[in-house]
Amino acid sequence: MLIRVATRGSRLAVIQASEVEDRLRRLGYSTRRVVVESHGDLDRTTPLYKMSVRGIFEKEVDRAVLDGEADIAVHSLKDVPYELPDGLILGAVPKRGAPFDAVTPHPLYLIPPGSRVGTGSIRRMFTLKALRPDLEVEGVRGNIDTRLAKLGRGEFDALITAEVALRRLGVGGWFRLNPSFFVPSPGQGALGVTCRADPPQELAKALRRIDHTRSRVEVEVEREIASKLEGGCTSPLGVYARHLSAGILEVKLSLVKSSGQLLRVSVRGSPQRVVAASTKAFELRGGRLEVGYWRSQTTH
Image (cartoon, rainbow, N blue to C red; front, side):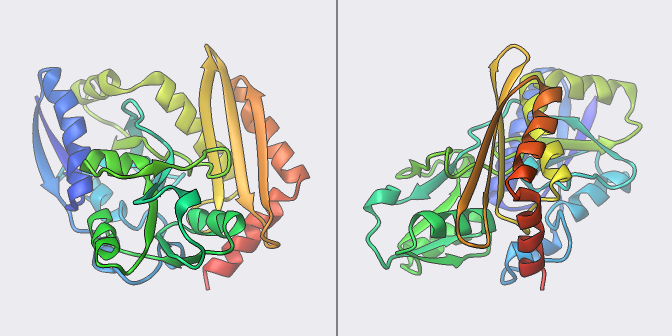
């Protein structure tokens, strides 16, 4: 069976698509890549959290699947909207990579006061401001290669991004940020493979074979919590779930409040329990209200 795989054309996106293609080929399937240029790639100046369209990078790639030009699309799951377009489903979540944030080229504690630190994430931006108010934190657009090039030209003294992106690109000289403070975005580190809601039986079987159950449970819990709290790229919300043992998860949530305080919540239990318990604990501490505050601040 030939499986057509849609992806953005950036180096990182192609590497991510290649990971899925490799898994499929090892199972005996043939693949053909379909490269799609998205609006998010064309606009390299507007901060991501100010763009009005959720899933700005994924919309056109998914359209290739809906229009029959591709059978599946591969995305960085943290960028995929919690509600998929009509006619699409999340067909597979391969085994998750490192979900953490990283800083390059120096550890955070060695970055001198007054240094310029770039990041494309409002969550990372305001978390860093809360922890290191002595630094100048600025937004930076473009794909990861563009951001690293800006760092190399001296436009920034340090760059904060996803650890998994640096790993996939083979970049050295980075340092993991403490996930107790820099709680990852929902789905960070995972790939999401979308397909039509009515895939052919053989394609559905192929996707089931590359689906990683533990990873899928973790990211679905994260995405459900974030959806209930209405948090996304327009709020500095972090949600991270990990298995402690069979059927037991630990979920961490974080949010930088309008006062600059870093709000953190941790809950343990079954997947069903942690969704309700973590959202309730977060709401009791004013988390939902603050998510709404950040959305209003970043969408104007």
